[in-house]
Length: 512
Image 1 (cartoon, one colour):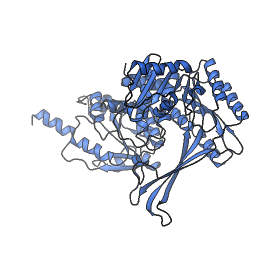
Image 2 (image 1 turned 90 degrees about the vertical axis):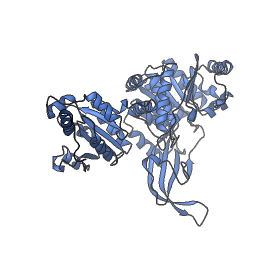
Image 3 (image 1 turned 135 degrees about the horizontal axis):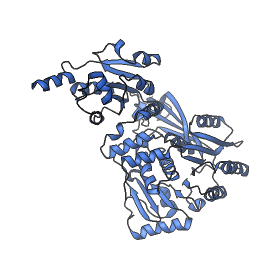
Image 4 (image 1 turned 180 degrees about the horizontal axis):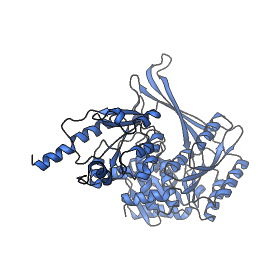
């Protein structure tokens, strides 16, 4: 089986940009209460949580929408909400999705909008780091979750309105995603009408199913159940011990595909990765060994990535590889997280021990920085020629990284270095200098710039912290006043005395 390389994944990520999907399903609000477990209640053997922060985000089908947005697609969405406060919150959150082109949330009187509330706590005296926000007093488990919801079937009028919206927009989209969380919005007749409408318009249909009766989804293009859901629905084991390589096993699954008029099953198998079964056979995509913080919402990420890829023209096998990489990013984050294209490329390179994806094009660096800010990352920036990379450079970069979450390095191009230091410089080409710096663990991203100074780059990135060596005065640092204007800070790192590229060159030339 052909494995996509970095260039192929990059091409695929560019291809899905602007791909248009209709997302229909069970929309909900995920609320997380963060706090500190300071003591045990005298009233019951439960921790007392001192609340520090409450966050709200889209869940269920809404999390698919969030990931379509973050991966660069465009989205139309439809579902049902109640006549309650959570409905207003959900609609406000949808309005914040920049890629949402149109939305139809039908309000049913007396119905509850699904609201899931999780309580996440740290032990007293221990604050939660960004990487550990999904962890609690009990390792990587939340202390408590409670759900407020209505799960009975929606009314015929609601169904008709959602189908009417779908009929209006089906010509504008390239694929349909159905996110079924068994909350009552997706009844069998409705599903068959929606799937039939999409297939009549030659639009692929991707379904994350909850029902054991897969005939509800007959005629869809691809179903994306997890292993437990697939086993319950098909009566076929997808455990690690199952002989998934046997012809009999493979044929049994393919028979079900034919019976249900499906093109493929994409089964998410947790730490074992993804398995794609289509009419040509069985294809497995193993995951990469990594620390898993939270699997919440990883299936939504896979669904969004896979659907975008297939709808943009990729094969199911290519799309499954993209979904596998996206899932690898998602499980390394807390909660139902979104995944960005640059993170997918980083995940691929991390699996293949390459620093290539750290080096970003100049025209993409502003969007990358904006995505990092949306992830609440503290961005540190420094810049230089870094010709003949030496211990002084490495000390500066390591110290810079300590000042935030993400270190972006601006590297002067060869032409820029010549303008600054003369025609004999640089000694090392910009490609080799970029590779050397990107190989350093403390460096997260690098961008080459051609101007004599990094002012334009700073305006694109808008870092939280600007770092230079203390051989400069703060008044001499290009961009210092610009950063201060929006609340950024400048930090001067002590330079290593007696070490510089100029001195190294003098020593080499003198034969010393």
